[in-house]
Image (cartoon, rainbow, N blue to C red; front, side):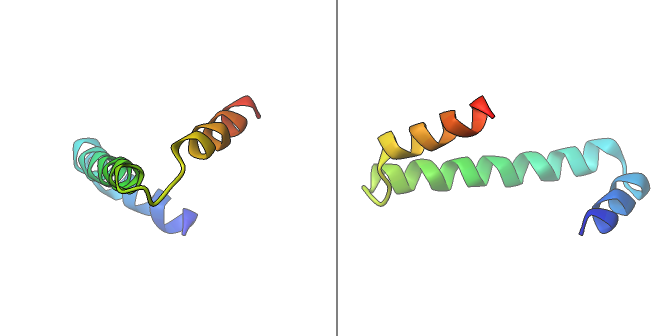
Length: 56
């Protein structure tokens, strides 16, 4: 997968793949926020896990 991504980045315009990455990241954040709002996740545990990863 890494080799495919590297090839894609080399062969496509920066603005194009950057825009695509932005859409992907925004959709993931939206899904996480919706899950938290619906009570499908524990926002405190999520924040703790996020902070633990950031500390590494």
